[in-house]
Image (tube, rainbow, N blue to C red; front, side, top):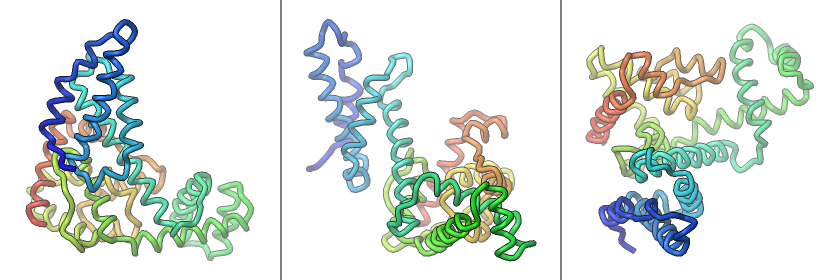
Length: 286
């Protein structure tokens, strides 16, 4: 089936749904409600069918939630829905990457948190202790028996190994989704483009920027993808802000786009334009 994006944009924007009273005009409201669900689904298919088609259930859930929660004071409903879907899709991709990191091994959320804590503490202590001493210290710090620390260490090794090997085409697309935030730049990379090659391309483009442009772009790129990369990978590329990375590895804290805007005394829209202009430059080089 072919989807025309402009057609569905117009249907969404011209929908009378939010002018209807749900209580007194129930039949008309329900009719427009289902029509809106269909239009939102088709709009996303027109945006990128191959990317979003597997997530019909999630699209419907987000669309339903947006319709139920929308207030005309929020402005454009389509913008409201797009923001909600991009956030949901980022969560979907992030969870998919986390699951793939463990080769299908079932890892509980508690274990994932323990692995993050283990890696952070091990990085701080590992250079001064042998393995057995490290496990003893971590056992005390994490309030877990040594045998559990050993299990977490084994799981963390699977995670690190996978971070290095999983730079394939699908991961590259996911990196693009995170970096571009799904906004003004769409589409996939050249077939076979590896994530290492992609990150190297970013590094090369970053090096050509004027010095005054680099800090904000470095910060924005870093907050969007540093959680997806291994420490070994992070160390390779100069465009990543090492202070932000260090704060994330140590305390698990990453600044928001709003934080970055405040840091440079700019508004968020201006920050978005800056990073998207840089991403357009990268895409021309692909």
